[in-house]
Length: 197
Image (cartoon, rainbow, N blue to C red; front, side):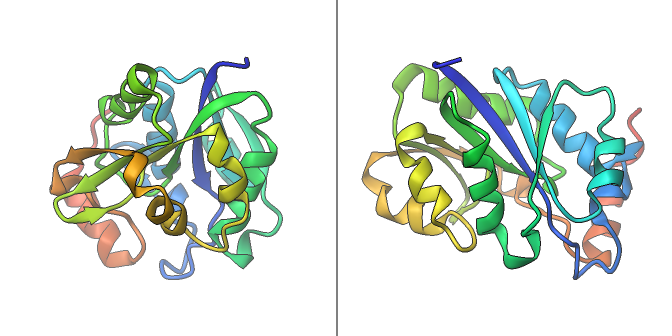
């Protein structure tokens, strides 16, 4: 496992802007969280770790049968930094880790795999993604940066900024930059992703 490359899916949030557990909403014929985790599982990482928090029992039920392990972030209400800390504590033997969000419905297994392939070929500190002019997840971090991730309060932007010079940036289609936070977002995503299965 010392050279394993993990994928982490951050799925602990409380969906406050949605008003109901967004990760359990159906999209493309399956719960949103299952869609994202299934695609990450298909991307070829050595393991997939899902960080759960709010409504964790229902979220884990939605993931039943997928080849994952999970960790519970009991402090999810304090912000995303707590999920990074939980993840790092559960990645004792990983050489690097992808961090993906559980509410980006338009990324594909091939998209997640691109970061993995670049890291395996070049081993930079960070493989990052830019959608047009916007840098956004997923990002892949080498193990040397795990302590910095564990010190975050919110998102990974401070780590990305500190290590800009060593980062390999992959250009992604700007149309894939979409996350589901509000009922309007969900309606737009549902119209773009009719039932596929």
